[in-house]
Structures are given as C-alpha cells and as structure tokens.
Image (tube, rainbow, N blue to C red):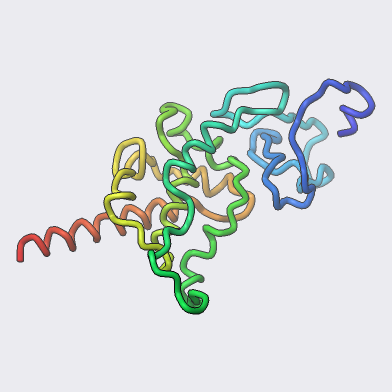
Length: 204
C-alpha cells in the first residue's frame, strides 16, 4: 500500500478485511503463498522481499488474478448442505463431537492459496483442486446433508478425487491450517466404503 500510495498509483492488488479472515489478499511472498495482510515483514530473514501473484490463475493486472476457475471448481461440488425435504419442527442440532470431525474444513476463507500451490492444477486445469474436494467431504459428512451418492460420485475421476498426488502442498500453503489433503483422503475412503456397501447389497 505504501508503494501504491507513494510511488505508483497504478499498482493493483486485492485486499479487504486486513484481519486474515476474508481471503482477498493471497499472494506469493518470497516463494510461499501467504495472506499479505498478516505477514510481518520484520519476521522475514531477508531484506529482499519478492511479492508475486498467485500461480495457477491468469494474471489480470499486477497482483490481481482471475479467480473464476477457482470459483467454478468450488461451485461444481455443491458447497452447501442439501437438506431433507421436510423442515424440522425445531432447529436441526448437531452434537459437538460430530462437528469436531469436520470443523477444520469450515475454517477455509477461500483465499485460493491451496489451489495455487497445487501441482496437479498446474499441469491439468480440469482438476477441481484441493479445497473443492475438501469442502465436498465437509458437507457429505454433515448429518444434515442428504445429497444422493450419485451426486458426489461424479467426482470419482482423474480430475476429481483421484487426481490428487498427495504431496500435501495444499496443507503447507493453507494459512488457516485447513489441511485440504486430509479431506481428499477422507473423501476417497468414504467413497470406497460406500461403493463396497452397495456392492454387498447387490450380492445379497
């Protein structure tokens, strides 16, 4: 902001909350994806600070990237609870121990740092990326979600849950410790178990 205010008024970048909760200001600082608003420059071990736009997304101007592929990937998995047709008489309560299993995935602030760090996205733009799959797992694990298996089975492809190389760069890049790769692994396991259950039913 000092550079824009004092040296170059044309410099473009995104920011909003300045409290590390909105996810707008994701950039690469000295080779690592970060939320620029939370980075304390004095904490860096160098006087040379290189700021770059997030990779894996088209650069629109300076540090501003086109987030549409990220949003489209997220939208493709239906990142919301699919409720039962009948509304409950009271609120649909969930035990804390149930929420604890998926709580880490609710902490995502959609900054796209994981998407930008993903080597699979880098080589295949069709891959929907880490957080979309982790979000899918978060919702199908929610007891309030009743989406049919056929809906999320669509991600059982090389550009979906089986595309991940499990190198965990998304976990390293996430500023909120969401660990998207954990969600992908859990999603794979849930898919295999569900397929096995259905196979056994057919055998009977």
